[in-house]
Length: 295
Picture (tube, rainbow, N blue to C red):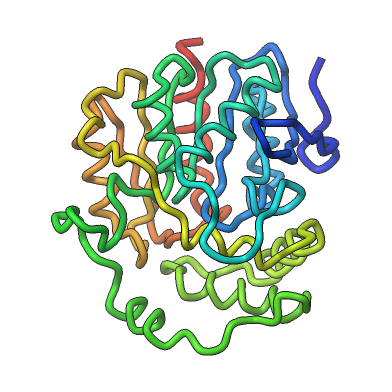
């Protein structure tokens, strides 16, 4: 029997170590499990319900969750967080444990893609495959990764003069701020601003301490795994926007070159963002094929 659709799936809070994590699941619990991992500062709301439903309709058991410091999950005081990337990895494993999933297809966007890489390298028995969306083997401008292309010059100038931050206690201020980020990170595909504003508002509504999401921007990544990407032994799919100004397309090319057998699929015109509907015609079939487990 299929679980509730993405829009109506109930929020289930699970315990992972010392934190509580808000989760939602839909699709066939007997089907191939797919864990969706958000980007930095994002709640699970940013995974479009129709995209989640498309995966569920293909027989997948789709699980998404609020990372710590976002949405309905445990939050910490605003500032440098008392955790690192390895703790976020433990959280993801805790979500799988709570759902009785030994190994899953892990689909991560941006920071979530970095987590998927870490899981494949450090916990190889917990992954059936990884999908890396808009992510990097090292990160833009990261020390020791000078072979990777830097962020675009316009975006670097934008970061250099970001202006005042939002009033995190005011819904309209925060949604406007997040929409400005979306514009800065966009590619050549026009933004669906009403949808993005509604999603940002929903995320704010579910976040008791909205400013805690900024802790992710101060996060320490944990032990680097780029030098071990050659050890990844599960199928890897790399999906990357050709117009990504933050993590340019060359980062996707590097991932595909460094992970054995990885398949690189360009998403034309996409920037550094959750996949807009304009690329779903390429993205959804690629995800369904990649998570089929040979079925």
